[in-house]
Image 1 (cartoon, rainbow, N blue to C red):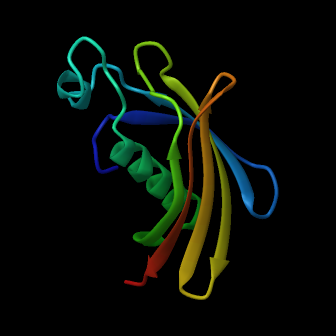
Image 2 (cartoon, rainbow, N blue to C red):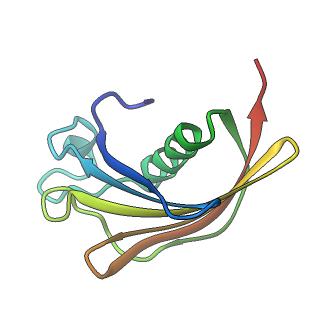
Length: 124
């Protein structure tokens, strides 16, 4: 985890061969939120992208490096004081040295983020 104690994984469910649903809980007291933004905390988009990468690594068992992003749509602000529980739907496919991830992140009925990422598998 790049940001220690930023979030906790509550559950990762495998829905099918390529589809997963993860539930996470954001730590509203994390230092990131003291600066982004005092009195009105908002989860930085780059942190959400990192969470998606970390969940994808957890699921695939590979270390991953971001190769490209497309269709990145931030659709709602994620305030950890109001909506700390997030659901991340992940569709993960592996093709040779690449892992493709389609994500939809939501809280309640609100979709907050949609994106498609391609990662390169890092072979150690």
